[in-house]
Image (cartoon, rainbow, N blue to C red; front, side, top):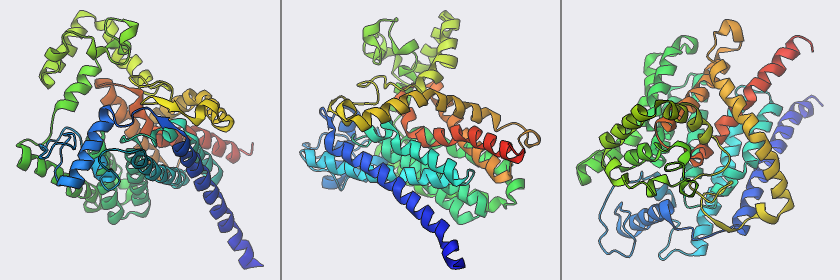
Length: 440
């Protein structure tokens, strides 16, 4: 009888996790089989596809269209995603190829929901952790992203895995887990380079918290080692093949595309989302980082109030917006001909619920980002919980800083959904604990 009682919680936990996995995967698998993307190999996806085919057929990292016999190597886009899909692609592209990519991305996204549960369990009780993971499982943006030949799903998976490894390393005081966390963060950086400098504030935060961790400096340095071991070969390759450590084009574009208030050129509605295409000075502005930076300075000098509001208020709001700007709108990056969210009653209800929850969850997560830095004499929470939430907070603040400087397209906040939801649930979980302690 005693053994049965001991096994019951584990059986229940296994059942709950199985249900979470089943829910997450079934929503994505059904979407993959019933959504139709209009010309899926376009724009950014065209580059990723070309890289992948050239890796597979020529062993050359190039975005030249695969019909070119001797593609010219380049480094415009990071190699993580092209290598991920390189064994799945075919030339010419086919519907079955796109389906294969979407299928594997559905698996990755399901694992992201599961990792969110384990990440949330580091600080929450099972019910709150499950609620957090369920938000990830139901997220229309994450579900929709699995159908595109784009980096969102893989990047979200790697970033969440890295943070889970960091939190586990802090708890277990394990240098091996720190090494793994650094390696996963490097893989995330090789998938989407905006996160590549996060290793700096993360390492500083862990170093400053070493007294609470009772961790030796050498163990904390292993996260940097893990990052460098994985990331450095990409830099070495670029120097050997191209003579430069990286291609600055994306950095210039990010700065350039972020200078237009409300994503419009001269407030003309028809230019929304693509203002740089209408700006006659675009070529001049996007010559290099200096030309883009000088344009930002010039605009602040001419209209300081307008651009202060755009950079400090409107950009953070735009970054977390529900509707995809410079895309098809709503939850869609590229146009879709068919989607379960158009005509399936279950998907439509999920969309409605998540739509209304979106801004309250974002607001709670931003609130948590700042409150967690209050002295522990005020918060009175365990060291591990405080360090965990501060790490997640640091990530959100880092991305806000990057996209306040650059382009705050809402698409770029999609991979942050798991972290946003964990942070949003923290004030709720904290309040529940305080009420329970007071006997309410």
